[in-house]
Length: 89
Image (cartoon, rainbow, N blue to C red; front, side, top):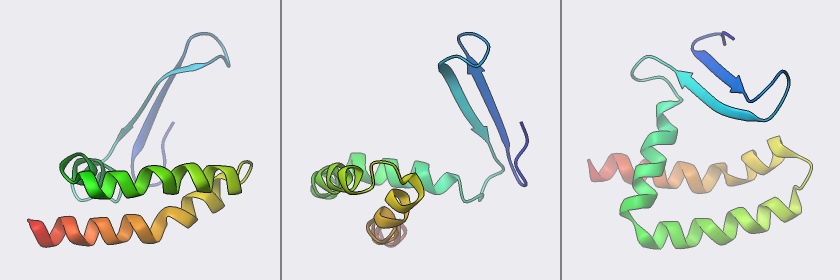
């Protein structure tokens, strides 16, 4: 499967079955790399990780069937962490 600006590879355990692998391939600097930066920031900053965990749980309850709204609701927190990660470089 090809996205507009990166590749996505999905493997399932059988036809239309459970996904076993979901891989994105993107050039350096692509917006997808922000997810890696965010992950690494949380791993290195326990206080941010402790703040993020209950936020995700609360939002997952509020937006049970609205994945995009759930994602949007986390965006301010993620933006703050990414800004801090850049400042720490």
